Image (cartoon, rainbow, N blue to C red; front, side, top):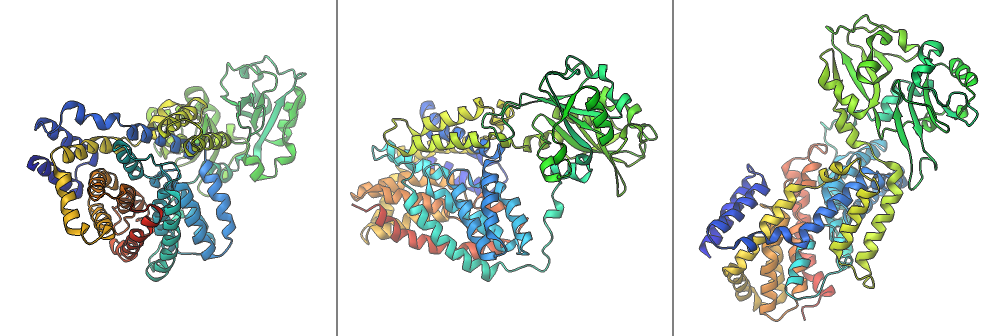
Length: 622
């Protein structure tokens, strides 16, 4: 018992200190329990075979697909438009949308997704972002309490109850209390944010510091002004010819940027079948190909007439918003590069520089001081400090930052590629998400929640919602997985050595005689206090067995006490470091530590008191 307590105390000190990663601390504690023979090898590794761990891996992949396809962003952006110019409407919509997303996506993913949208909307109505970003972070935690998968502590108490032979908590078991929690939190935050989160005198514009999006770059360089789409018909004489045969650059002063084939259902097709081809010299033109051509209108028409091509969207050329939809970046991307003053390309023309031959990229436009050059690009000579907009496959653009010292690539191309959302897959992800929820909610479908999550995660990968399998793996937060897997055996060690029984007996002897409400309050606020120093996941792993033991020793229903653990662990707002979501909004909102204390402290205390009385209404003690 003393050894276990000593290992737990040391681990807690390292958790609080924060200088060593939490997953490393958890694994070191696990190894210490093995070396001291507190746990057997099988017991120590049991956390990594737990269904909670497997479910969390699947949920990370599902959440990643929601973000990668832009589904959540699409829904959120459309709903936020309802706010108009009203700060109150914006606040209520942000709380509603974020809470709903928080029930299905991790709170970090939810905040990362909503942050740029909320900043943009606040700017549009001249609202201080300080008033809305902290509520955004808190709403993600509140929303996580509405579903089984909303936050890891929910899964942990479900597993604890199941292991003890109790009832299985369903997907929506959390919804009634979670809804009350969201409602109460929304009202409290509305008042506290108006009092404590007024506009700061030194607040700076956030949007100016963000990098331009890919479509913004396209518009900025005026690429759309010279972009045409030409369709190869069955009678077109261009079929079977290669790009080198056409020699369109010299004969027509045009540049074929890319070829798309197989788009059979438009951009919003549920199972879109589209293939983007970067134009190299050996590619052969086929029937039904769509050529994306850059150049003057008169040259485009002459080229189309000579080869019997259909000008695919001539009437839409003047509409930038519509034309922008024709530029996609799934396989082919764009990037800006700055020519160094010492570059050997200075005074060379674009045609002679050989970007296409050497690097398989096109130069779409040139920014020279405040002027943008995009006509007759092939003959333009480079100047030092020119900024070039180049286009090619993401891999070839990535090569530019490694293969030459004549320029500097602005941004990280491969990182930009990972940010490109597969918008056309959004409806498919929605269907898979709905399927997963139906399997979890309805009892007549004999599938366990972990199985439903695994099915959904594999469907996300197999249907191409990620760029590749590696992209799916990158969505998994392995630090969280190893933290939980490493800490789960700690609760087993506490139970095995009698520490849990000792703490439980202390809580029961000191508070049990006062009544179940006092015991619940003790469990709730003990959990809430510990969460100030270590993660809510680690806290719930430690406190769930104690709550279970305390309740059963008094012959009470353990469910409300376990809910007290998950709510005490998740409703932690008093510190920017209590949850990753809180920390994520600290810099853009320009909050101080005391801002969290002023707003989060009263909110955490009020919700705690209310939950102590609300939980028994939904889950009686007897």
